[in-house]
Length: 219
Image 1 (tube, rainbow, N blue to C red):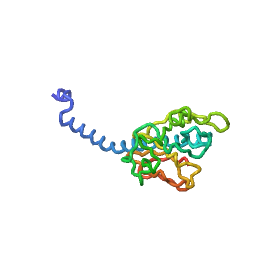
Image 2 (tube, rainbow, N blue to C red):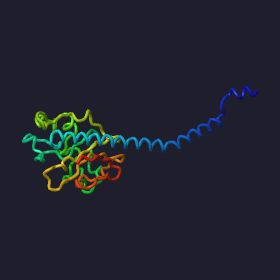
Image 3 (cartoon, one colour):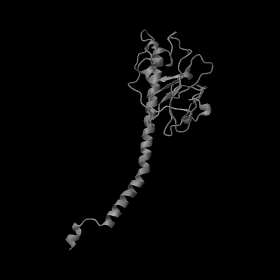
Image 4 (cartoon, rainbow, N blue to C red):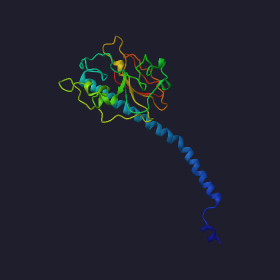
């Protein structure tokens, strides 16, 4: 009889106990797993932002220009010209004032750098760093010959951040002819998808990310 009882396997009560123990273990491990995933995403976002920042910096060293050109009048003039871009952006979800919690919507308002979808003063990072087609046009290309020239591509590709949003660069703030110099940096809106770091920080200031934003300083 004892052999027959052993061959029957677990009883329903025993199975319930085993499943309860497994559930308790998983519940205990879940917070640590979520924290690990979140930390890995933040690290990845910072690495990607740093990579974009280095690419922009190398571009500037090679061309002696900010990567914001959108005209053919004089592609070697470093100061911003009428029609040049305020914002560069990568692939991913576009931003609107709903996603911009900075003062005066500094990333998406008419007075800001206008990184929102549909803005005519923004362009893709790819056009400047990979394709040399500012504004999507080959006729506006940066000079590619001579000592000071575009020598890209500066990145193999540009990705969205780990939460599906676009990396942004407030490139228009880098105008060397501006009276008040502003900081230029790459930004990810972080896990919450809200832009919380002002795009209008002084270049002389130590720029720190607000909220859960992730930034990489260029200038």
